[in-house]
Length: 208
Image (tube, rainbow, N blue to C red):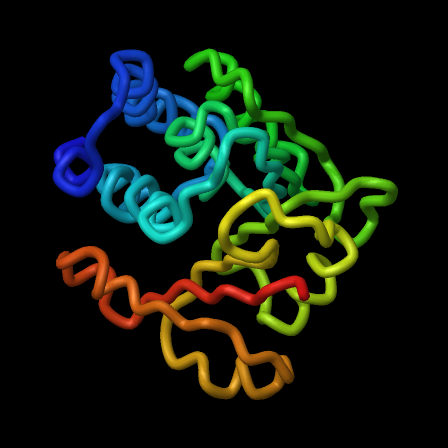
């Protein structure tokens, strides 16, 4: 938790309690359904929660914004972001149903009211629009954009344009080239000083 409070402040008592509960909840569920690698579970706040909240360090979503988390897995980045932005609506989707069982259980246990989950591939979603799509290391940028673009609405609620925000690591030059896109690329080591964030990036592709 100290990683979180070191970089973020202004949490309500409810938010702090929700964040604090994540360690025990994910540890317990991970024994039943492996959604986080065994060696990473003890570094949950650094490698998963803080990593997810890097989006909140750059983008301040206004109340009423809607966000789809594509390939949420165990609920990252969606769950930490939903705690941070209690008045923003998050729809967490994944093609693997058992992972969503963990997401639903965690969201229910900490009483998150702004999260829904759906067992579906993003490309199969019809008649739904969101302000933003977020994702963490799920697929190449080209694929993520192909899935995200039809789901993004044109009218902006925020100061920054609607679009895709994804968290990725390593040398992304070839992946970005193959996508044909020109995303904003933000090095996470400029936000967090921990070694874990070296060679980790946030990519932002505007919808229009």
